[in-house]
Amino acid sequence: MYGTLNKVTLIGHLGDDVKMHYFEGGNSIARFSIATNEVYINKSTNEKITSTEWHNLVFRNKAAELCEKYLSKGDKIYVEGKIRTRNWQTEDGTTKHTTEIQVTEFIFLSIKKDIDSKTKAMKHTDDKLSNFEIPKISDYDKLNDLPF
Image (cartoon, rainbow, N blue to C red; front, side):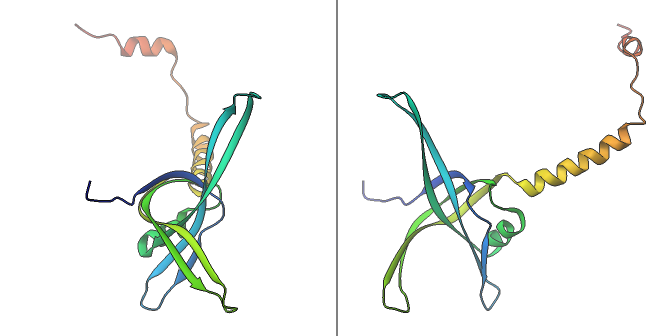
């Protein structure tokens, strides 16, 4: 095979809230980490083991703004992207390294902000329905009486 592929697919939960950085000219970057879990049984002890892996994600521009608007710690997200490693020098001359996922595609799977607003809407709907009278079962039988 002559080609190569750098593609990552993850589903995980945010470990912290989204951190934004804005640049001159209107560009922006959002950074946060997600946790993925692997659960298995230790065959010798029959103990359930959970192994957590953390992944640093980077979103750019409009995608970053959507993450800032809708995501918070604990939310679940699906992402696709590419692995990138960065190196930089600190002020004291130490070289630092990090590996990140440059996200190209994503889907919000569960959003607490959305769930909270739906719960409030449902409570409001319940108030409206409290005055609604449900027809008796015998009335339904008359409605389902077909002429053929």
